[in-house]
Structures are given as C-alpha cells and as structure tokens.
Amino acid sequence: MPDSSQRDDEACMREAIAEAAAATSEGKMPFGAVLAIDSVIVARAHNQCPAAAKRGGGTGDVTRHAEMELVRLFTSKLTAEERSNAVLYTSTEPCVMCAGAIYWSGVSKVVYGCSARQLEALSGPGGFDIPVDTLYGMASKGARRMECLGPLLAEESLQVHVDSGVWKNAPVPTTAEFPPVTQADLDIAVEAALLKSGLGSAKVVDDGVVPVIDLSVGTDEQVAEKLWQAAMEVGFFCVVGHGIDQSIIDGAFGASETFFAQPLEDKKAQSPLDMSINSGFEYFAQVRPSTGVADQKESLQITARQGCMDDRWPSDEFHKSADALLEASHQLAKRILNLLQPQAIPHVEPETLANSHTLWEEDGQCTLRFLHYPPLDSDTTAKLIDDGYWRAGPHTDWDNVTLLYQQMGQNGLECCANPRTGDPASMYWTAVNPVEGGIAINVGDMLARWSDGKLFSNLHRVRLPPDASKSRYSIAFFAQSDKKALIESKESEPITAGDYILSRIRSNFDKNRTTPMLIAIAAKYRSLIGLEAQRHNFELKKELPSEGLYYKLMSPENMFRSFA
Ligand SMILES: O=C(O)CCC(=O)C(=O)O
Ligand SMILES: [Fe+2]
Image 1 (cartoon, rainbow, N blue to C red):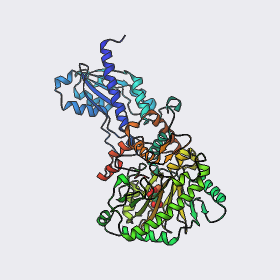
Image 2: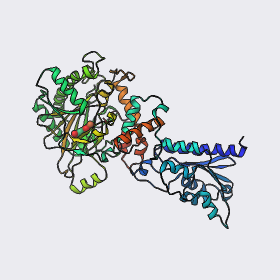
Image 3: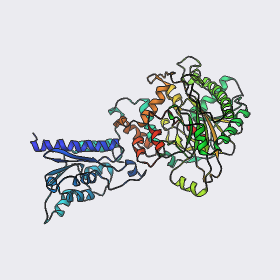
Image 4: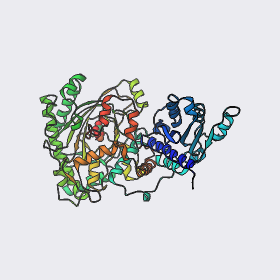
C-alpha cells in the first residue's frame, strides 16, 4: 500500500505526464513538468520545441524543454522560500541543461517519470549519459543537497513517448489494438504523411508514362476500358479527341492572361476572394499541407453554384470565355464519369455519378480554377527551391475527376502514386507534360471514396523550374458532386458530398482528432512513402511565419475546399 507521500507524488507525476501528452497534441516534443507545494500544483508547462524540428523538418528554440519553461515560469513568480518548499515533477529524467536550471531554481526535490536510459530504448542514444542523481550529487557537494527521486510511473510516461510517434525506435502499435480504420482516418494519415513529400527523394521519371487516350477512337466500351486501365495503373491520363473546340480553350487562356496581367489591386477588386464559397482571386495564399508554405501562384476560383460569382466576374469577356470552358468541361467530365462508373461504382444506378454534378444550381460544387505561376528571377528561384517552395506543392484533389488544361512548352506538372496504394515501388514522380490538343485528367479523393478505393487519387505537384523566367498558365476544372448528393460507397458510411468536403477540412485541421491509431497509421505510411510524417499540420503551421490570410485559410469555418 503506497504511503500518502508516494500517493501524492504519483498524483503530481500524472499531471506532469498529462502535460507531456498535451505537448504531443500540439505537435511538440513529448515532455511535461509541474511544480507542487504541499502537493498542490502551482505551475505547469510542457516542451515547446516543434516535433517536426526534431526530425529536421523545421526550426525551433532547442532550450524550450518542459523543465526550462517551468523554471522560467515559477522563478519569476515565487519567493526563494516558496521555492525551497517546492517539488518539481517532470515526466522524463532531466537532461544536463534542465538539471542545471532545476538546481539553480532552488527547489527542494525533483521527481522524474521514466529515466533517460528508458527513453533511450525508444529514441536511440540521446546524450543523457550522466544520470541526474549523480549530477545533483556532484553539484551539491559542499553546497545544499537536493533530493532526487525516480523513476516513478515510468510506464505511463513511456507510453506518452510511444504515442507521440517521434522516436524512431518506438514500436508501431498494431491496428489490432485500435478500432477499425475509417476512410476519414486514412485521409488524415495520408495528408499527414504528405508533409514534406515535396522535398522527398523520390526519383523523377521525366519521360513519363502518362497514357494518352483518344476518345474518338473505338466504341464506348473500348474507350471505357482504356480509361479504366489508365485510371487504375497511373491515376493520371491525357485525353485527345475529346471534342472540345480548341478555340474555347484558347479563348479561356487568352482571358486568363489578360486578367492576370493587371495590377494586383485591380484583380483583388474585380474578383474579391470569399473562401467560404471558394470563389474569387487569391494571391500566393494557398498553403499545402505537404509543404507548409504557400504555393508560388495566383489563381481565380469560379465555383459554379448559384450566387457564388455575383459581383465577382472580372469582366463580361472573361465571363463569356470562362462560361464556355466551364460548360464544355462539365460535359466532358460527365462523359468520363459515365465511362468509369460501371466498374468504379457498379452498385449505383447508371449515370448517378455524372448526374450528381450540376452547374449554377443551388448546391453545385464544380469549380473552374484559372492558375498563373508568375515568372521569377534566377536568384529568387534558387532561394525558393532551396527553402522548399513549389509552384504547387504535392497534393491530391478532393473531387471526382479533374480536367487540367495546359499550354505547350509550359512543363512542370508531375504525378506520383497515392501512398494509399501501398506500393513503395511506384512512389516516383512522373512528368505530366502538355500534349498537343490534350487535356490531363486525374482521379480525386471523392471518386476514391465512391469507388471504395478501386480508383485512387494521385499525388501531384508543379515543379518550380530552375529557370522560372517564364509564366506558367493552367486551368483546372474540378468535377465535384453537388453538396446534397449522397456518396454511397459499399464499405464506408453514406455521406453527402458537401459533408465529405467538410470532413476532409475538419479531419485535417481538428487537433482533437489525434489518437494513437492515427499515429500508427501515419507511421505506417511514413515508412511506405519514406517521408517524415507530421500528425499536427494545423498546430505545426501555427509555428510558421505567415500572413493573416494564411490563418483564415487554415480555419475550417473559412476554408471551404480551398485545398482541393
Ligand atoms: O497547374 C497545374 O498544372 C496543376 C494545378 C493543380 O493541381 C491544382 O490546382 O489542383
Ligand atoms: Fe491538383
């Protein structure tokens, strides 16, 4: 039976361990500490070093260990006498730096959870070579003594270290220990695993293997079969013979160049951004979860829903050109979806998928996005590439299919297998260069959901070329089912397309959704993709220097599918 002082020590230690867990949920290193006087907690703190920095993914103040934070906090508030009655509880045996700070703080006793040696089994050698009691013994020779106790509740403290997912030798919990994995969980894990994928060492296959399919050759069945193969094997393909008049495409690119050539203030004034409806002009504002920095682009979003573009058309000419391309793209997307549906979603009525896309109706979600990647001088470009910037950072689209219009000579788009496919051998980037008269097409997450993963959405990105002295223009049409359309997959719960998009936003940015299961999944995909995972994109991004707009982008309320 523990005596009352041991019970008190354990109660206080649990508070220190809770602080360590709080650090994890903020994307910080998993260490916590509290100060107690007569077993009443009077101060608490946790580590403030970003976990991503530990993995080489960012910067951080390395002195912000939990004990340092705590000592700084209470030494400025408590008298010397109060401090001499205080006990400091820390979830893990202090390092040399913190041991020094604790000693100088004048507390009477320090209690630690797991020992540094125990942590080393998870972390690998960590430079904690001098056990802290030896250290205090040495320091207090001839001066005052400070009591040192531990390990205490080591297992509970170590569990927080394991759950944090930051230590390379920590066992990855098996899924058997957790509830079944849902699609939303997978989505979060994959998004998490994407972080820094833009900087990954994946090889680039420049003379890519993106299939080119002529839609005007063969029967519908034959074309459907070719599309299906391409969608299954590569996820990206290029269609020619699609029936869209080149003059419509050229007209839209012309309107795009005219619009983007204007002064920034004019563009903002002509088409003000409303992120809640994903409409309007955006300038270097879209931050990808995979990179944590803004895409080097400006774009104009047109969401084809009633009212979304009211007072947002830059000009009548632009309106006319955009409408023509929107209409033609909508028709082509519907045709492609009709061809894919029998194999992708055999359990729903024919044409259900295609018919779930309306234009300009009450709950339409199709979007046409005009993109411009402005030219840069060579010094700026070199610096941006060095700092991990992309014209468009790696991402998957959230829609059913995307039609992407490119212009000859304006390369840079690359695609890569989705980590969900689970085949590390296919994790390389392939150029998706423009093809004369062709439209690049890719599968998005929504179709992956409809089809229970028979089809996968692909990662893709737009490279910042070493010579970025010329603009790149592209136009993307995102075919997205109407808000009220029900995505009836066989294996996942039915969900409306509107809620699906919202859940993607929430799942990415709701820090409360952190569970050990997600950590396990992220760890699994991290090893598959060979990239650093980061479970707390939202929290991590709060660390990054960014403009106000960025915070708006990150907030679920304000950000309606602006990451597609
Ligand atoms: O500009 C491009 O080629 C790709 C754009 C893209 O992937 C997107 O906006 O989702
Ligand atoms: Fe995209």
